[in-house]
Length: 66
Image (cartoon, rainbow, N blue to C red; front, side):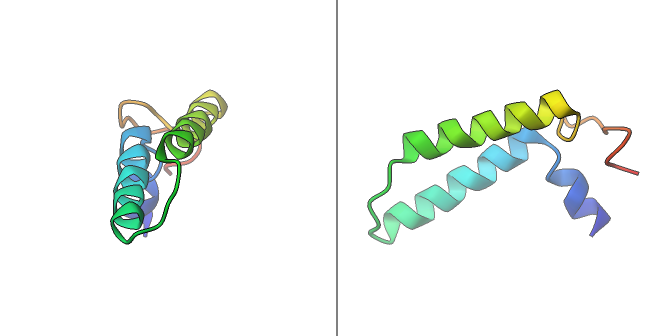
């Protein structure tokens, strides 16, 4: 569980995960605006980086990855 949480604090993994989910949903026939979802995901990740919850390069954040 600790390994999963440390992976979800990396913005690259979160964006890749969301992109994969969007691809699956679109291929299932749902009509969604994938560009808006990715912009929202990037914004959330950006806020996470500013708050120190997430990192851009995969390094550990001292308060969240103990």
